[in-house]
Length: 85
Figure 1: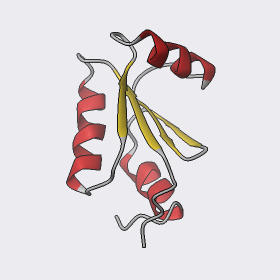
Figure 2 (figure 1 turned 135 degrees about the vertical axis):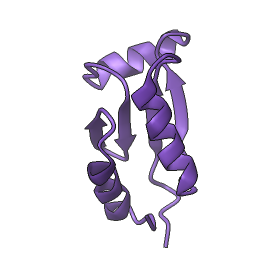
Figure 3 (figure 1 turned 135 degrees about the horizontal axis):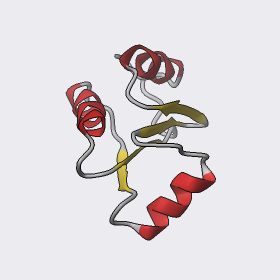
């Protein structure tokens, strides 16, 4: 059962190959997420900095943060949040 209250955010930039892979992973598994482009969106950039982002992609699953695209770590966080992956 999916927890619809768990927010997933992908902080990305348009020329980032790892960001594209993370986005494809989330889409492939039908995981609802919000993508925030830190290059084009000033508010996204500020949120990214407040979250302690060091580089993109930064993926937040609820309160958990995944720096970079690490499929196993992302899968674990999604499962803990109640998603079927």
